[in-house]
Image 1 (cartoon, rainbow, N blue to C red):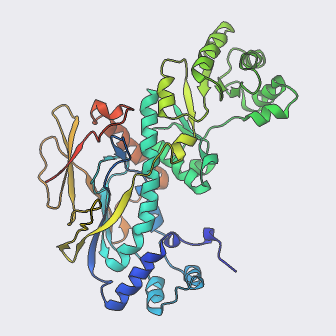
Image 2 (image 1 turned 180 degrees about the vertical axis):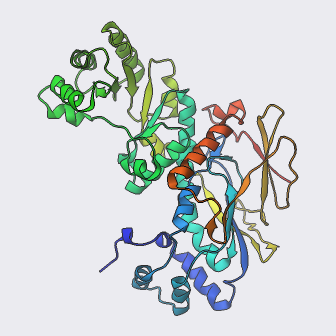
Image 3 (image 1 turned 135 degrees about the vertical axis):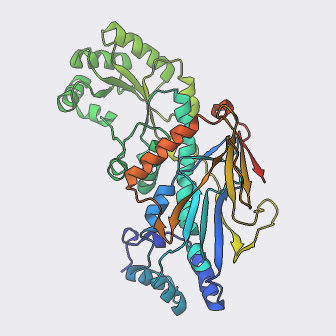
Length: 432
């Protein structure tokens, strides 16, 4: 009987060619060669001015369970992978190397060495697919999310994209959104795993279930209290607002708008609420919002945004294109020279330069140790030593630390970083 993927460890979240390379390296004796692999992005998505590193905490969590037990070995055999030397190696596998990288939540630019893996080839090669799938996905969500946070200008954003992506991707997306400043998520698993506040009231189906809006609103209020958010656009928005205030009273927490021209709808909703005495009732808007739609609502009387599709899908969060490349073998620098995909050999060091006012001016990357100036910040920090995390944090603690760092470094980027128009990276990556 085939094994359910949910029963297998993160070690199986890999591509077969990692095992093919490992089998050949074991056969010719090169699997034990000391190697350094680096993760970096050659370029940012078209028009993006910066990247946000996210997923490091999730990757370190996964590495703790990166094992090939009996179920995993059996699953490999079922796929025709039956090299005895390879399977013996995998059965005893444990990552014992070192990992360094940018702190999660920091910004990165083309060529930034966001993750460095130092281990024998036979260990380091197995981490490629997992590292890239986690970092590419989470960093794409984080970069999109931070643009939305910027466009919201301090108004709260709620992540609600679970129904638009894979069920586990939804949890990771909620984590990345929280990292860059989203105030809550609709996803219960994300709340349980990472301590992210969860929120949610009702959909149109709940209104349609009842004989009329008043009955639906009354049922929701009886259960959740007057501070709840009522969805008022199932039928007619104006009548929905009147009914909501009539049933709940002027202390109603919020109304939600999910369709139509949101600028017009929000303005009319605010005017009507005020005329009915519900001056403290908030106006929350949803409906496939992205950073451009949020920016267009800047002058509208909106109190918060619910964001889903454009945050968790490729249309709003294009892949960041990180790669995992061998840059050093037994102390010798190695590099790829193919056109358009060149890499720079040697383990990298990185600092970010700032002016006297604390504004970042350049990213300096070098294959030799760098001397830091008065306003420089070293970017690479130790993450694992001997296969063990340098800092033992719970998932919630790791997320909180990343969020705190991101909030701190946001203020160091130049003002043009927050422009929504297409542009070049705001920091030049200098090779020292």
